[in-house]
Amino acid sequence: MTTDNTIFDLIEKERNRQLHGLELIASENFVSSQVMAAAGSVLTNKYAEGLPGKRYYGGCEVVDQIEQTTIDRVKELFGAAWANVQPHSGAQANAAVMLGVLNPGDTILGFDLSHGGHLTHGSSVNYSGKLYRPTFYGVERETGQINYDHIQIIAQKEKPKLIICGASAYSRDIDFARFRQIADSVNALLMADISHPSGLIAKELLNNPIPHCHIVTSTTHKTLRGPRGGIILMGKDFENPMGQKTPKGDLKMMSAVLDGAVFPGTQGGPLEHIIAAKGVAFGEALSNNFKTYGMQVIKNASAMANAFMNYGYHIVSGGTSNHCMLIDLRSKGISGKEAENILVKADITVNKNMVPFDDKSPFTTSGIRVGTAALTTRGLKEKDMEHIVSLINEVLINRTQESAIISVKKQVNSMMEELPLFTW
Ligand SMILES: *Cc1c(COP(=O)(O)O)cnc(C)c1O
Image (tube, rainbow, N blue to C red; front, top):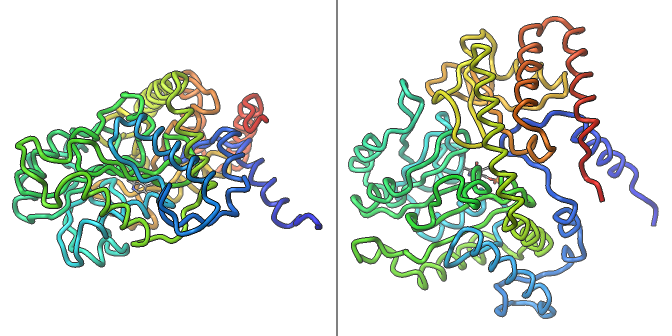
């Protein structure tokens, strides 16, 4: 067989891009070589529709053990009573939950996309906003934070069947117990989507939704540092604190509903190579090293937020309690799109993002979102965050001067040269 140089040369290019640039995209991370090895393994050849021990294909003895190990590890990691590790992505996990617990036309209440929520929480361009009746809560203009009393009022008015808590660009912790009170008061199901902070939640560095939320979904590739994929979890306290059964019955019944909503409801065969890679990543996340990593992610984010504020940048909500922050660039007279495009010329990768009460379009935006999960995996510390913010500021201030941008790019490349990745 001849080597496919076209594709492999491009993969090599991408590998170099990842090696030499500063990765500040809050939803990205770098997996270990073991996670990559599992994801690129012979398991990609296997069909295994169904669940361990209950498959529609022969030859599943080995993948059954792999998937069961992955399930056991993720339950231990989050203190969950039930898990499904088959969703191909975070969006697929959310689609399965909604298919399982809702009927078309039912009302859902989610975090507004333009305030930091996710497309799958009811956006009009997404299935969640087309199949269901979406309603939203957002952050307060003055504080940049959610106001639970306000969410209670919206819930009472809209009577949602499902409330979704969790976001893609919210830098504060979430009070899941308070959300549960709101859900119980209107007899709604409560789902937490912890796609972004799940790695930090796993190490008890942020509130854990498992004791409070009926259902929890997450991606596995953000702070959790696994392969691209999704998971669905439930805790044992599926019944509410008043002893009342939820609108959907008990845990056993609900787990059958959700398993069926993943397959055959929204997916076909599971990706056993990715499930194995999730298993490896969950094993890594169970270790003490991962707690040290998570603590450093948070310390780095605080240091970065402080550095930005020292340069006069406005951080939505006034800082961060997790791995990410949303920077409102309106006071600096530059759009999110412009900032993203200029920074990438210096090998600094960020993403443009709407800020709450944005007056620009989702394509232009007034802000950028940054996070420290990937940089922390590269081994960078608080002092480096201050340096990085000074480089970002230099690029944004001198955005019309090619030479200034090139000089920053050189500094970025030499900083990253010292921090090897993908060592086998
Ligand atoms: C990233 C994210 C998702 C979607 O994950 P994909 O794997 O990209 O489908 C869903 N919900 C939230 C809150 C996210 O941040």
